[in-house]
Length: 135
Image (cartoon, rainbow, N blue to C red; front, side, top):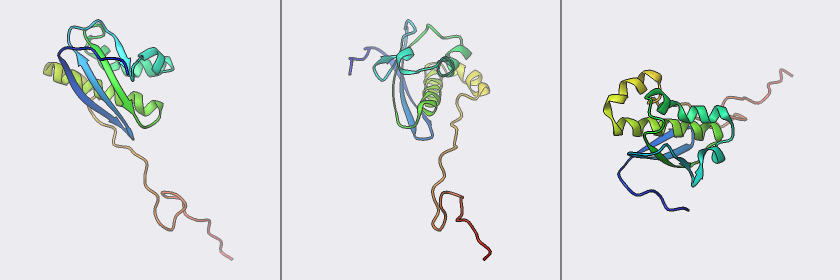
């Protein structure tokens, strides 16, 4: 694992389904975005996912203001990107509390509570019942 940047940072955790992103937002940055030791473009495949990850920074006009270092684990690609978005939003509010209304209005601070429903006894999956036969 490469050495991280040294200096003052704001730490936050973002979550989505089973994905957890640990975000460090460094002050006085140049806009570098490191995810699990790789550049964001190497880690996140797809322009749509990049746009989702950048959304909180675009909303507060801070694309080049911070350096961001993220460790993300669990879940799939989409859940990891949403966890990154949630973590960045929470770190931005720690960096500057005046950004909170903008991020809150855009819906970036609300954790998506939807998770996989557990399997129930007597059923084939969470809600799927065995096929019923009249005779």
